[in-house]
Image (tube, rainbow, N blue to C red; front, side, top):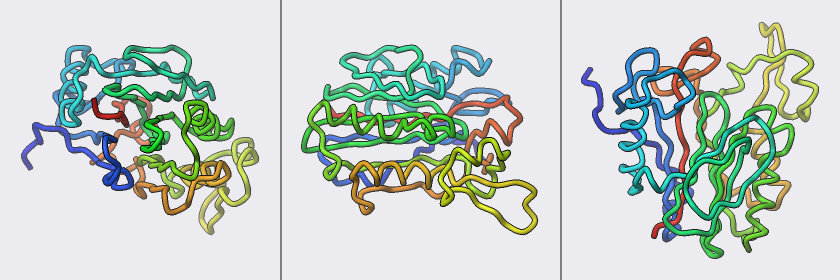
Length: 251
């Protein structure tokens, strides 16, 4: 099979009819990184060659209509802090960010966790957050919606997209993790030695509690354990690349 030379993107359909909203999510195809980061690794913290990551980011952002200098990133720590961004660059120790500035691309890196992208097109506000199990238990989706409201967005107008993340069939956890989730997100099945968690379901539950319309929430229902398409920290034993979810307002 021929290796793609351009990024193979997922473009969330939930935003397709929103004027001026640009959103996308990378897969692992269409970059220049070598194994075990092959090929579209977008994370600098992985141990990959920095020049390769820079080229991968350039390709990915160009496919969405952004230049690398438009990108805003956060130093994700599985927390609940959300930054309001007015310019590109990097902010440390933050897991979500929001903006009402046009031409700014909000990026979130993941490799099993969920990247949650949100938009209120009428208010001209977009957001992105990193929702792993710790951040989700802490309420990062809730905090991100609250940060959007501070910029004039309203939950009933918001649309949200939850990226591919580790699926419930693959997300086995110990009792100390399972007890931190609502019963509805803790799954049991004959043949499973331990509980499993529905991470995307937990994220959606928080968005619904904040007043988003269920019809305005889209979940990409595939697991990152599909390592032909995605990077998976758990499936790949901790040495792997990162995907990126991006959302922004067109200039």
